[in-house]
Image (cartoon, rainbow, N blue to C red; front, top):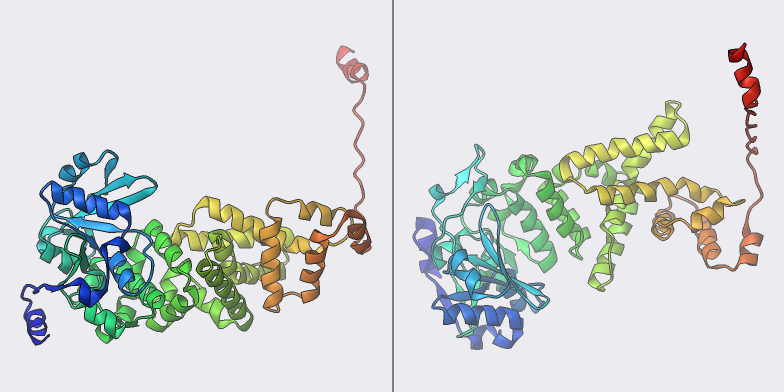
Length: 441
């Protein structure tokens, strides 16, 4: 351990630690058949091949991996011909996706650790990096020690260059190398540190945590589409509540969801968002489907609500004011997060249906129940009622109404209270002959 510490301080190459199966406990049959086969075929072709990253980390923590990534010394153009269904992808760094049945295995070539081989912008963010290297260099290029573990299916050994096994044992998340430099190379690493620590129940190492607050402005330079993908992973991790709490603690939240800090500081808004995140986490952990549109609609609802009330206060009519408020909030969010149009369209429908729940008389209630997004909008109403934003009686009525038979529904309808709309009389067109008479004259 002292030798590894000295080598790290002096910047010397890391010394690999090879840990046999008896000490780590991961057997070959714990991997997916596709991952084992890909590694075997690469070895038969004369290359090295290891399962790497999150799959090894999760197996050590007793978590079933979502996917298995492979690292090898073979170049992409050497990997592709070995498999019947394989595709080379990527611009910043080329990878091979090997398809076996319903499973896709990602195969990457060992990367170089030389800092001067990559193209960076003026802030140190890596723009292009397609330089290959050794396994030792590849380990140095990975973000966290717990993600730099290599599992050899042939020998069932784990190769550890940076003390990832010891960090997992101590339940610590630590960046490889200088944290500030690594965050400048890729600011999304700050987000990943928070997400993985919350998901895995790890504590951020003090040196890993310390520069995040001062470097948070770097998130402004992350492409919106990539930031949206990372936020989606965070919110659908099953630990969204813990992730957002940690985002606030390290100072990252303001740049991700603009105005989120304001939302969470409002007593009513905080309860609403907390309930939405708790319900999402519960569904994810139970393996039930989750709608990203519903979650983003919940996160942004109180911004829409505040803008809606402000516009009504300036004299705008209710429905046009709501439409304008939705535009205002989504314009702000989409500029940063690149929320897809498919999601924003659903969010708009859910928001726009909320005022319609107030109408419980005549045909309006029937039309609302038959709307395509009714169930999602009703769930949203239930969330509002649970947070105290609307009367519980309103949610109870709609819950009973949607499950009632036709006769019960008719009995439940409330009497009309508002003024009846006057039907506009259609003007009769003059007969064709009469209309053309003046012209003829």
